[in-house]
Each structure stands twice: as structure tokens, then as C-alpha cells.
Image (cartoon, rainbow, N blue to C red; front, side, top):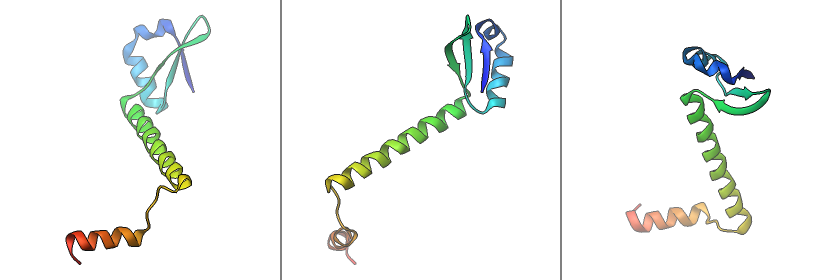
Length: 85
């Protein structure tokens, strides 16, 4: 975990380097308390992608629990009827 004080934000090149090295968030503190989080755009995109995927999995599991599913055979039959076999 990388933590830097707010006053260090003036050195943007150093903050960018720390983000790249940490390969994760850099926490910015003010008066000893967390105030901001800075991160590399690639890390941000990976993190958002994982959250999106987790949400899709959660939706799928909820559908499964609620019985909102169809069998593979019924999907195959529908495709064969619609597009030919």
C-alpha cells in the first residue's frame, strides 16, 4: 500500500511513478487521514472490468436461484428451427 501526504501532489511526475510502481491505488492523506485515492488508468480499467464481471456473475446466480433458466437442449432446438441444422 502506497500512502503519500497531500503536499506531495505538487510533484505530479513522482505521483505518476508511484502509481505505476504500486500497480494499484495510491492513498493521499491530509493531516494523517485518508482523503483521496489516485490510480493508474490501466489499474482503474482492470478494477472496473472485474466489478462488471462480478455483477454479471451475481445476476446469473440470481437468475439460477429464481429458476429463470432454459436448458441447453431447448436453446439448441430453437436455433435449429430458426437457422436450420
